[in-house]
Length: 460
View 1 (cartoon, one colour):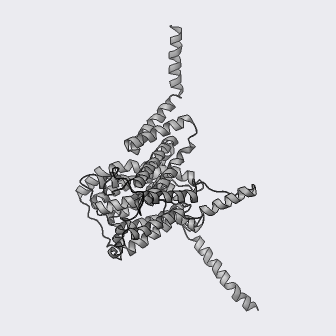
View 2 (spheres, one colour; view 1 turned 90 degrees about the horizontal axis):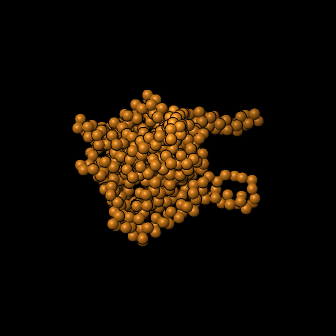
View 3 (cartoon, helix red, strand yellow; view 1 turned 90 degrees about the vertical axis):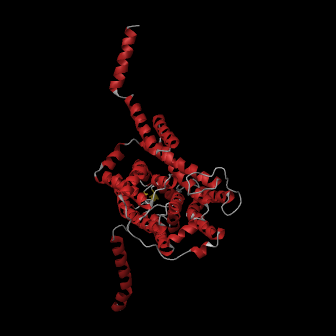
């Protein structure tokens, strides 16, 4: 009898032993699901509205190896998800990509890599020395909110263009003279249908909480929780993938299985010079502001229980590119827009981006660079829909500016950033404006003007 009891309890003991061993592994807590599996999967595709167009443009124009980029960004996603424990996105360095695609002559792959390495080295230096944490602590919140607002609205404006007009990602100019047709497999009606579906399922992105109220309110909340558990963004993305093959069935014959051969790039002195001057210089301030400062501020808003330091984010961006760029992978960073998009569609833990990384890894290893043929047929209107929700979610982070002074600084910073197409320019104007407003409150400023007024009253 005792032997039977021992035999029956052994599997349970072994199961508990393995469970305790797994929970003791490093980063296990970071990858633990905070919501349902479907919600985390839905959040994993929340940043693809910016990722796919830029990767597609660099692949077609600059001959970037898509297989290498997918494999390296897959590892970036998995590692950052395990380290940070939140859906920390891996986004293309947008300024480098814009220069590579739009300026003539186009940047070559070694020059793109050189720009990414120079930017990464700068961020790594700022992170290791503690300067990035210093900037993060002392940069006024209204200025950061202005940068976030401008980036969010810029994403939303681009999303509307994606939905309304035909796009050519080999050029940065939108085809405003060629409106998208209403019907078809990439028509306006399809995009509007996806928008309506996402709104009905996810609403405005609010979190539905339990409350002990009336039965009618409880039923409404139960229905909203059921809807929010649907991976709406994932469904929309999978619809886009299916439509790729419907729009052009011949792409099946162009698919070649297996990854590309990974090799170390040969970067000449001229490549370093061109990459630094044309790519790194405009990218560095954008990476500092949007990839580190804005990401940390937004993370503190969305995940107050999970501290993400500016030093860790800065070092993370530096290490990613100091490794991957040498092999021809696309220069990457973390972005506030990507974080907002993944949170908007249900991402709450590091598992969300880890799932995305696993998907990229499979695509990079199985389809290799031939996957670009599939992406080339992806409905641009659907990408615009995903980008629209990500941009609005990022812009709504600025709603905590309660005083008129804070709103004034934020709006001026956002307006300059949008008009000048430069987050660095808007940031500089925001800092100057904030300091001028604080100068009015200093005692020396007040006493100087007070003395002047007294003298005026004594000597009419």
